[in-house]
Image (tube, rainbow, N blue to C red; front, top):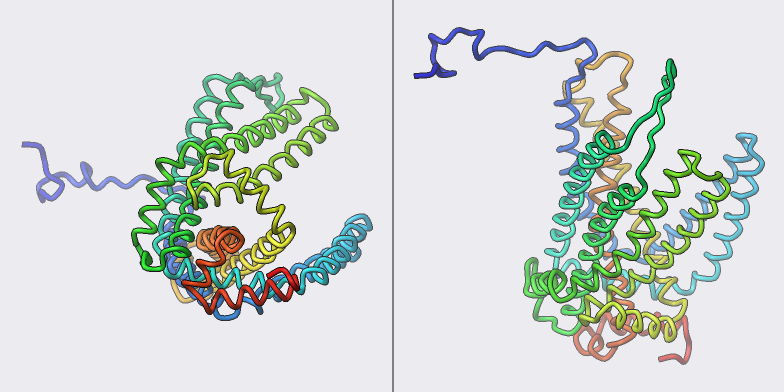
Length: 427
């Protein structure tokens, strides 16, 4: 019989071999423990912040608006203090624009507050949709790792590399056809996964709006919306995602061509600017189109017609409410990230996880960066779910106010009053 690892007669050298440790090797156990600890802390803190948003949404929207104005002012001051006059002037321009924007939209804050409060109520009643967001994010991360391995293999085997004699700098001759297909597969998959979450949240919001009895963590609203998203609505999601993915892939090709000097920097800059504008327009259009896909099961073209009708009826009101809530969600994610980083520092100081690290590495900086990144990533998932719910609420209030009044009279009265104050005589 073969020797057993637990056999006392087995020679120690057969099973007790330890690989040599180099002097520069760092123990990664502390990093892993810090990541797991901060992930648990960030998850709990994100749930707490969702409750805070439900209690004081108006205060948070005002604070986020003021924060963005102050950020633009700080950028201008930093530019002048650093001696960069151009950055300072640009900062002053943005500061002035943000001040004007804040003054113009201040009266719209109550309507955005009512939308955010309603969206938080939807997610709180159907918290299982947040789990769907985490699952799709894990799938996206796994796909990114797999794609990175495939890209490295293709680059090593297919794309030739030329090095000059005695020159340490090597240049790669890219195959732009292969690059386009590789980047298209990466961006298309990410777009599909992201839009699946968006459509699922919209479907859940519609069920909550029209059928209050179908609520719960893993209720029929959550399961049914997810099934519709992955079956009857999946074609529309793929079509809209493909449009954005093609533009993203083309932008990467333009960047690769610029780095390889295949055409001038000025032309590359112009191409990237045009593609960036097209990408932003289509992404914003998709954000609203997929709400109609998730709510009513429309095709992509039918959803596009619904978006045109929405902006014809509501105009800037939908854009402003979406923008104000977006500021809050970013600020909350940043707060969670910073608090998680601070928690990581405090926790690491009371453990021996980093005692064996060399003196030239500051564990406090390392654990703060880990906590900041982990907090931002984990908080951005429920925040994006709330953002999708806000978009759905804006559409539903425009198309089904009577059902909202019937099923949730208190929240409906608050939203009607806020909209009437911003637009007297419209309701």
